[in-house]
Length: 209
Image (cartoon, rainbow, N blue to C red; front, side, top):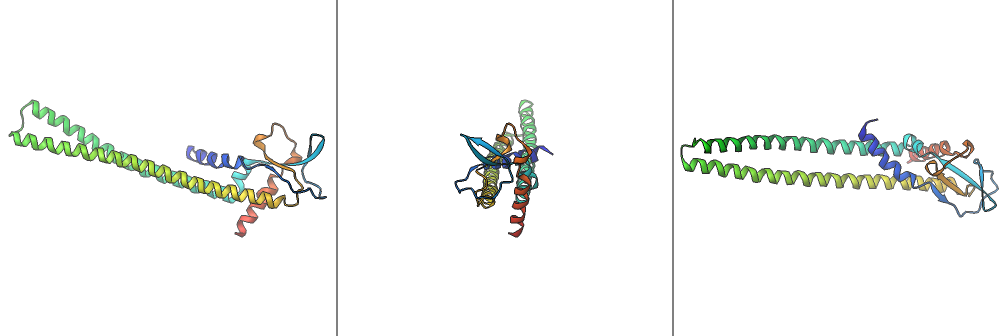
């Protein structure tokens, strides 16, 4: 997995992690929970645990969101890199012209004062143009960063809403009192894990839409 993919996936995964600490106030039904129970203040509490990494790897919406963000990140990076390299070449050429101008001045190589002043004016104008291009590049960098953050927030919210809504539907009968992500669990038993059911349900729901 490349660096860009890791960055994008971690952004989405961090948002999903926050979802899976959900208390349900619905009165538990007589249906037997497919998960184990824990004791809280003397009362048995049915609990389900979801593996966040599995959600990110196998939920179609999460995969598509990650791919979309990665594509946006790569596109922005290429655009900035192209413009930055082009500006760098212009700056290198400008620096050479400045040095050449200084050598000519020292060697009194210009045929006339007017010719020297004309070249000096050209270099000053070029310097102003390069400064403007530097600012444009910085503005573009900021715009692309803002656009990426906005797209990230939109996709993250969409993913959060989707998972949140599914979990409410999944536990509509209240057979689970608590659903948590495995990142907040120090120790667990396999019987608690409802990840496969959640992933399958999420994908079935998403595919219908």
